Structures are given as C-alpha cells and as structure tokens.
Image 1: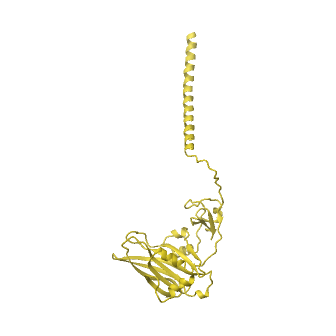
Image 2: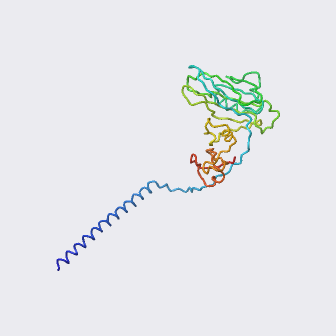
Image 3: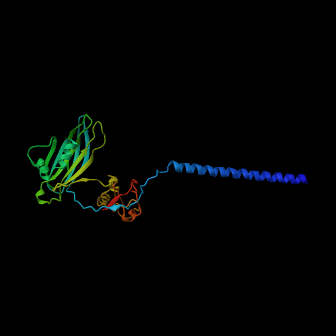
Length: 290
C-alpha cells in the first residue's frame, strides 16, 4: 500500500514537472519578445527635441485666372543624316504676333532678356537690326490656329551648354492692352543630341506682361496628360474641357489642385479626407480650386 502511494506521488510530480517546463518555456519566449521589441523601439527612438510637430491643414491659394494668348505644341521630329534635325512646331495665337525662334541661347542671355522692361524687350524684336544671335525664324503672323513651323538644327557634337531652341510669341497690338495683360510668352525647348536622347520637350515657359511682370508657367498633372492619342474625338473634347473625374471616387469632377506637387486629382469631397497626395504621397501644403 505504501509503495502504491509513493508511485502516485511520483506520477503527480512528473506531470507537474512537465507543465512547469512548458510554463517556463512560455515565460522565456514572452520575455525574449518583450526584450527584442524594447530593443528595436530604443534603436529607432527619435532624439529628444523641443520641436513639436503640429499638423496644419492645407491653406487655399487664391489665384487669378489668366488667359494665355499663345500656345506652342511640339510636332514631328526627324533626324536627317548624321548632321541635322528637323523639328515641327505648331503655333496658335489669339492675337497678331511676332513668332521668333532663336537657337543656342545661353541661360544668362535668356534670363536677362526675360527680365528686360517691356519697351526694351519689344524693341529687340521690332528693330530691323538683328540684335539676338542665331535667329532662325522671324515671322509676323496674324491670328492662327496650329500653324506649323519647320525648324532645322545641326546635331550638337559636344555636351550642350546652351538651350537648343528658345521661341518667342510677342503681341504686335500691345498699344491696345493694359499693363496687367499678357503680351508675350517665352518657351524654352530641348531637342535630343548625341549626349542626351530625351525626346523633344518643353523645359519651361515664361509669361511676360506689358507692365514687366513675369510668371513662370507650370504644368498641372492630371489624367488628361496620360490620355491616349488613339481616343475618339468626343473623348478628347471631354478631356480638353477639364471634365476629368476624381481619382478616388471616380464620380465627381476634379476641382482641387494640390501643391507643391501640382496633381489635379481630387474633388471637393475627397479632398477633405486626405492629408497626402493620393498620386505621389507627398504632403499637401496648399491647394487651389479650378
């Protein structure tokens, strides 16, 4: 009888020891997880600072609408042999203008020309003396729509240190407009050469007013820019009228342009629910309504 009692006790101790081992292992695992977590949090812990991050709502920018009197589109680009290029530009003008193309202009020359007072600026192009070097096209145009201009240029044999083409649309009826009306657009173009094979593109545009004010024109990024050239006419008209729907709800038209990324992608309702741009994830600092 005593032997049976001892055997029962030993069996009980064996069972308890097994549970004790399991419990000990669980405690060790939990302690290890807590240690690793604390170590990683400590590793990436920000340094102590007095700067407090305050999330401010995006501020609305109230912009004035400006009707552009001119536009320029890049057309067909051909390489002729090993020495020259042909580039077709399509010019549109709502007013009589001078259309001037200058080749190989330095950045300093362009900057000085853009910042010239209007009288000096217009005098450079109205005088019979060709003050600007490398003027290739110097044409007086009436109101026109998508008029093609063929420009020839030699292929640069060295890394380019100047702008390939700088075009000027200059109104010839400036005596009929006020100082706060746009009078000229300067467009800087890139064409590929032996060292940079990027397709022809517009690098930047400047809108010059009669009073001397200059605006650096920036493009807006929207679904319109990604539209296919094979779409039918109705779809193209739909896009040109700006009737592009919100990228989130796909129901309401786009009304808000986000800054500084310039993505036009949100309606008024969806804009209230985001802090970052849904396209590029950059922080929305400000916006304006179109």
